[in-house]
Image 1 (tube, rainbow, N blue to C red):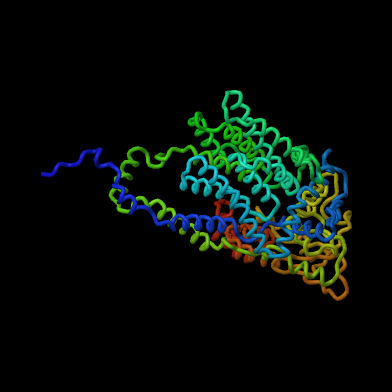
Image 2 (tube, rainbow, N blue to C red; image 1 turned 60 degrees about the vertical axis):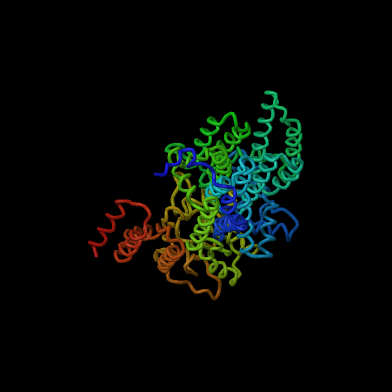
Amino acid sequence: MARRPSRQARFQPAPVAMRERANPPRWLRAVVLALAALALIGWFSPAAADSDTWWVLKGGQYIVRNHALPAPDPFSFTTYLGRPAYPAEESTRDFNLKFEWLAEVILYLVYAGAGFAGLVLLRAAMLSAFSVTAGLIVFHRTGGLYRALAATAAAAFLAGFFVSDRPYQFSNLLLGVTLLILEYRRGLWLLPPIFLLWANCHGGYILGFAVLGAYLAGALISQWRGAPQADWRRLFLVTAACFLASGLNPNGFRAFTVLMAYRQSAMIGTLFEWQRPRLWPPTLVVLLVMAAAALLIWKRRQAPLSDWFLLAALGAAYTTAVRNTPQAGLVVSWIIFSFIPGNYVFGPTGARIFARVLARARNWAAAPEWATAGLLLAGLLAELAHGAAFQLHETAWKYPSGAADFLLAHHIAQPMFNTWEKGGYLMWRLWPQERVFIDGRTLNDSVFRDYRRIIQDSPAAGGPGGRELLGRYGVQVIVMNGFEANSGDPYRLPVMLADPAQTEWKLVYRDAQATVFMRQPPEGVQALASLDVLTSLEAQCQVILDNDPQRPRCARGLGRLFARMGDIGRATRWMGTYLERRQDRNPSDEELYRRLAAAR
């Protein structure tokens, strides 16, 4: 009877010849990296959909053609009306008109040369490079390819919450470059020109100083502890040079004070990206920050001091505004995948079982890379199947192109009221013939307050109501899309103007994106039936459902609107459409639908 091999013998490594035969082919790693790059580009290349992109392009176009900054503001006729709503508003307004000038020029030139395909690919490249920063730092520290790929994937997932064609992406790119230079300690004197570029592209260069401060603090503490490799003097000189270089921009050093002033603006406070995230129950990012902190405590003898300071600085930045999710996510990604133990996923027993299985397989050494290639290929195919990857165009269905064509064709240049979210597009299409009422540049808080009264046709306690404000601003033209983006509720203004009893405003244009009203239509323009506004609202909602089925709330808004109007048939149809597609559950919606169905 043959004797069973000892436990030690069963786990002896395979002979050298077998290990050589088991090595993966040389081309496989190149395939893995290529698939990872394609998956990243695909993840970051949905169609251009950010409404701010349009005013960014217009600003760049203005600077290129006029060789001057757009200050004072040429694009909106309300920018300088009213009194400042908070002490620093005028300074903040001037800052906002200038602080992204170089990024606006770059984005416009890319658009002029390659259209939206160029913009989408540029954005995807910048975000991919930003995410790869986490992977390169992990690889530099551990030499582990799979750890590096996992860190890159985690950073990319979190960066995916803010995919837009805006100067914000230059901050992400340059933050990644700064981190790599500091981590590798190579090319430190490239940082001052990087900060010069950064300060003229976006105000996020302030985060760059948080990064410099983290590495400088780590070096100072290491020096105090007697570590021979500490190079705090060089880091201090580079930081000082970066600070001086960053002041060479149209706003000087005002970014440090304007950031505080933003918190005084009610208008900025309404924007999602400037909201404070909830800390309890914790968000995913908060949980990751906690996990990264736990790993730093566990591996405190191995972890660089700079990691502690970076986690504190960028984690704190996240708690002030959700727009800082990608930056916090970058740091937690490399901390977690730098220090998490290799056998953590399997545990001791699982690791032994897995080792036995692999030891019996002839090509076990190649299995991880084959598996990684398979996962990346599956991810890439899933992106393509979902239809969001490599969409090298804009989301044209979102914007009132027909309304803009109408105004241009009839040479209409009278004072115009428009919605906040379409102001950038109308600025792009109509200026210099027409100036907008409001847009996403957040320039005037008192105008924004009046805008909200007008858009909801609401009276104000002791002040003018919405319709009176239209007269005070001298508005002669109204360009309206139908629905508030998040709630899906119809705006009250176009519904009020649909009332046949009101004769002050005439409907002169409608389609599936917008309606246009005028006090006095120009010669040759025939007024439409006012109730056609409701037909336009239905068409607009159908376009949303066809192109963005994850946002069906406009159907609920229409159902409730028609229920209030007593149109039971349309109310039932739209509430039924919403209930078929909804992502949430609200008993009141179901109860309304039952009552409507019973009333038919």
